[in-house]
Image (cartoon, rainbow, N blue to C red; front, side, top):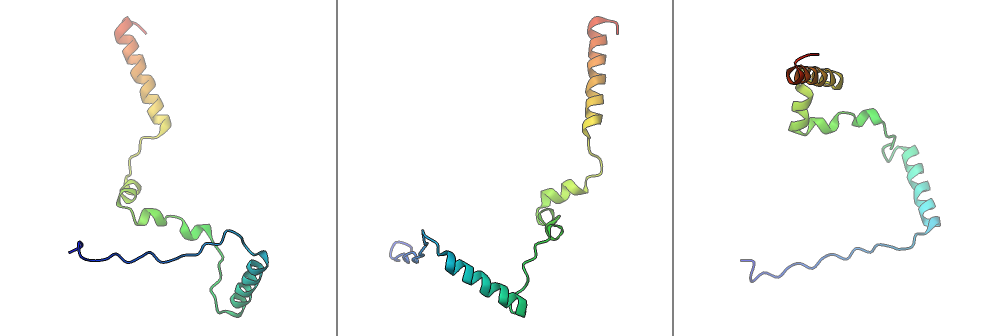
Length: 95
């Protein structure tokens, strides 16, 4: 029963408003040295690594990728123009 249970207080997270550039530089230097020694993995970001990852995990995007027949813009414009000509012929009786 939630009525008789006390809530756990939120943990205190200290967010510093001011940054120490010296400390940031030292942290970056330590990370670079550890990365060179092989203790940390490299952080080379390759855009090709992320390409297509979103569509793998969403069913809607997967279905959209599997569709073979897509109405392209040029084809849609041609169809609209033909329909306008047919409508004009019906309304005016001539081309």
